[in-house]
Image 1 (cartoon, rainbow, N blue to C red):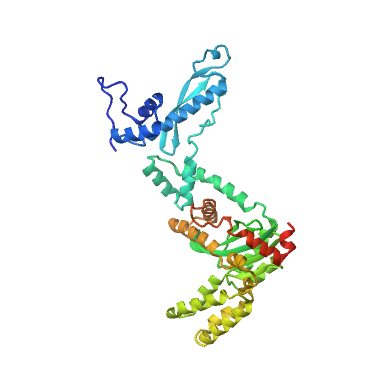
Image 2 (cartoon, rainbow, N blue to C red):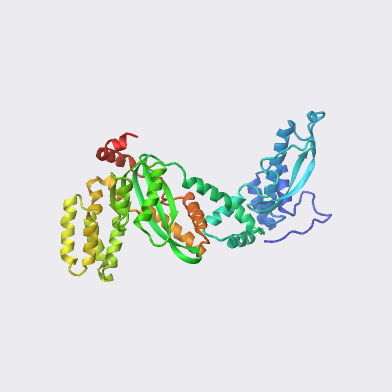
Length: 434
């Protein structure tokens, strides 16, 4: 973009050379600001950001206008109004201040009053940032950028030099929000609880893969939410899961109708130790993936197709018959596949007792899988996290920032009215007495 030259004595008094002057002139002329700014910026090759940038001038204009309005409200009369004479307090010039904004540093003139008790809200005293700048830092942090990368991004895009301390202070509020979120009270009954675990790299002396346990609940109104998130040590374990599930119970979850999980050994028993009445459904997608580990790649297609036929059977008896045929064809070649399904059979066919509306909800933990994909994306950008708290802050921000026009783990469950009526018919007063 081009730069502007100083105005010569022979130039028209209405001709402008900087973004700030252009914004002020157009506002005074009461024209359509947005269209004229774009057109004249293109025609005159004005820079957008920077000291004399077009957007910088606009921000300056808006902020100073808002501050003047605040001062008028504070004093009780407009600037230049004779009503202020003898009021006991009046305007007392301005003080210059540079604040950081979305478009870079902006130098503004803040009005003062004689009594010295004017406290502006748009740019509070001692504040060096206007609303939106911290949000930019937090958004970059949520995407997995490190403090150094955020500094470099702000310097490149906004021409702003910020310190690591400023970035740290902007993200410090996330830690407070995270602490409150992790201890918030939960609903008494959840229709469905989906649990899963992923591994991310965290430095604990040395960089290592650590498990992050995630629990997603669907309440009786059909609202999905992440109920808890914890960093563990070592590998995923059923005993560790029992600790986290007990925490959910202590936060108010007294009953879970159906819990969906992977085939981790001992996990169904841990769930039932916490909620004895809960039906445990193993995620059939995880079961199929586990099965393919024991099979040659050229047989994956046939095995996956036949196991899908088992899991889409209308009744448990029909599923048993289909699996018997599957066992007859593949049992001798891949006995480990058959053993995996037989050992977990009672938890594989739980959802077959339910009609289609409930099956669609509990068939798989794909809702968590979509969240895990975003977790991994944020984690890959960082390489590794310096500690558990840093990891949880980023993952928390991922949860709190759903993607528009995409399936997200939080939100309303589709066709929930059908599902909750079916659940009420099966579970009775565990659903209706709430």
